[in-house]
Amino acid sequence: DVKVTQSSRYLVKRTGEKVFLECVQDMDHENMFWYRQDPGLGLRLIYFSYDVKMKEKGDIPEGYSVSREKKERFSLILESASTNQTSMYLCASTLGQSRSPLHFGNGTRLTVT
Amino acid sequence: AQTVTQSQPEMSVQEAETVTLSCTYDTSESDYYLFWYKQPPSRQMILVIRQEAYKQQNATENRFSVNFQKAAKSFSLKISDSQLGDAAMYFCAFNTNAGKSTFGDGTTLTVKP
Image (cartoon, rainbow over all chains, first blue to last red; front, top):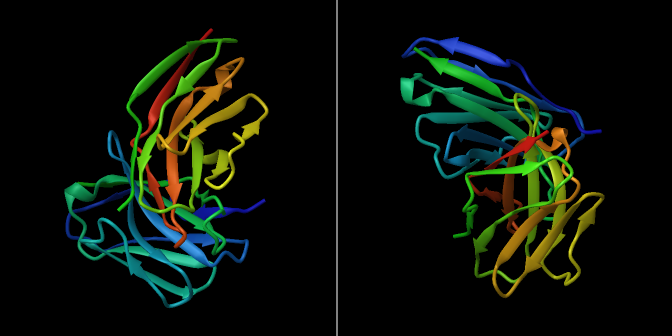
C-alpha cells in the first residue's frame, strides 16, 4: 500500500513566519501535488511536480513555493505566512499516468494567527 | 480548462437505503479519467471508484457504482445498502492526460441509523 506521510497534523504559526510543510511518499511515484482544501471550495491545486527538481504552478500558487530535491519528498513553503493561508493542506502522489488515482496524506491543518 | 460541478453540497440517506451523488464536468478532451474520492471526518482521502472515458461500461466496486453519461458529461455515484461508515465528504475528480486532477467542491453525505 502506498503511504504518503505529512510531517504535521496540526500546525499553528504567526503571521510573517516562514512555514515548511513536508510530505514523503514511499512508492517511487513520479508526480507529487500540494492541494489546499477550504469549505465550499473543494481542493485547489497549489503546485505540482513531475520529477525531481521540477515544479509547476497550479491554480493558486501565490504566496507559496515548493521544493523537490528528492523523488520521495515534496515540500510546500509559505515564505511569509498570512492569516488567509489558514487552511487544510493535502499532499498527494501518483504514478505518471492519467489513469492513476491520487494517494493522499492525512493533511496538515495550518492556523496562522 | 476543465471544470467539475457537484450540485449537492449535502445529502442524507437512511442506513441500508440507496443514495446517488451527482457530478457533471466540462472538457473538450475525448480521453480522460473520472474518479470519486471519499474523505471521512478527520481521516485520509481515499479512492472509491474510477471510470475510463473510453469505456461504455459503468464501473462498479461492491456497493459503489457509477452512472457515466459521456455525452451529457455526467458521472454520478450510487451507493447501495448505505452503511454508517459511508458517512463522509465525497469528491468527484477529473484527470487530464497530463495527470492533473480537477476536483468538485464536494458533497457531504450523512447516514442516518
